[in-house]
Image 1 (spheres, rainbow, N blue to C red):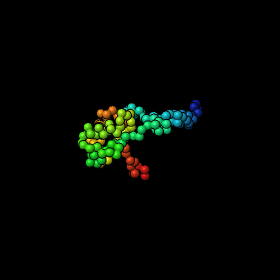
Image 2 (spheres, helix red, strand yellow; image 1 turned 60 degrees about the vertical axis):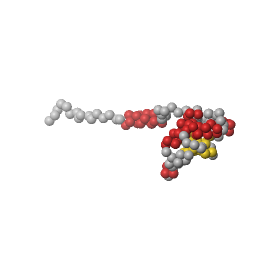
Image 3 (cartoon, rainbow, N blue to C red; image 1 turned 45 degrees about the vertical axis):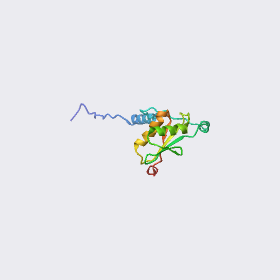
Image 4 (spheres, rainbow, N blue to C red; image 1 turned 60 degrees about the horizontal axis):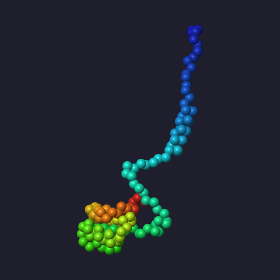
Length: 142
């Protein structure tokens, strides 16, 4: 028979439910108030557009590259091969405006060298606003 210590050992219990509630509330607060910005390693200056500027600017100059490597500036075919005839045709079509937007429309089956030749000719003439025309892939929309 035990006479001295008849007290049962009380089990110590820490109630963590309120702590979990506070942590989840803080987590939701930080997730909802955080802005996720994707930083790019390449710095690109994006063009700005407005209706007034668009109406006043000349239409974009189009350089087309066919599958076999023939070049067209606007709707005129470039006669001759290499960079020099292409540069002369671009200079005739653009005049003195080197800030004009240029769109390169190359056939998907043309070699990479032909596109680089067009870009090289434009770069030597001082054009800096180049873009390459593409079409959306039908498999992406489904």
